[in-house]
Image (cartoon, rainbow, N blue to C red; front, side, top):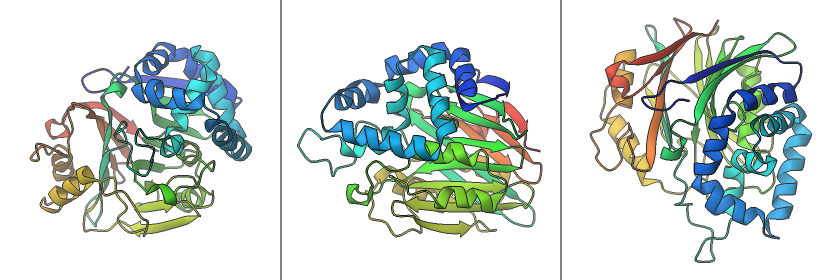
Length: 361
């Protein structure tokens, strides 16, 4: 079903009359992968499910459901369809889609939940963005917990209005908490960021719903509106690409409708998993700082050098290209705005082993 070394499952759901129909089709097609992911996901099993049964969780889950189903009813219906199609309990699907919005509120063993959740280092990604006269690319390592290996797939779908999208998807989650593009030529990759707990708004809009909404953006300005207008719970970093306009922007967001925009230019812009330009109190992530320091030592001015950077393993403890034991680079993707293609690589991208080349327009 995907992951390093395996074939990436690709499913074209065709024209879907409703959100529920899309979720149902995806749930049925990838039922085995979704059920397997739910069985093996230790964060779900050891943190989210035990917390969900407590009195403290009920108002948080109710607020998350109300906020997100109210603003995005079609996407909520997709979750219902995914659960029904895969035969997985709806609660499990809800918890993995809201995991980033729930985890900060799970009491830690010491009674304090100010520390970064050490149990789930599954949000690490690396991006390098360049827009020069000769090159307009975004290259991205999709890094995740090793348990996600074999539990990812590509979903293609056409909406009733004729818009189609292609999205790399974690089993049981909305497309896409990773990367994707649509037939308007809008593409994106995502990087998690680690705000401190007092920067998080409980029960607000979830990142998986915002990124699902991005798949329907008309253009890059519409994409920015979809990112910046909802009142989100947890911050995120979005790399937005416009194949028609040859633009790439990085948008960092935080709760309270805070955001900052950086337009990519000829100087390569590297983003790991810490805020670069939005002023937010954040957890100091040694892994991200190490990757940023290494990237600053590397010259990037082409597709080849960008892929070489994302394949870098010079730092034994915190390599840019990850092979475990906990974090693993699931795949690498390169968006070329001149060729208007999204290319997915398996294994170390330095080796150039292409899994798929997708035409964006």
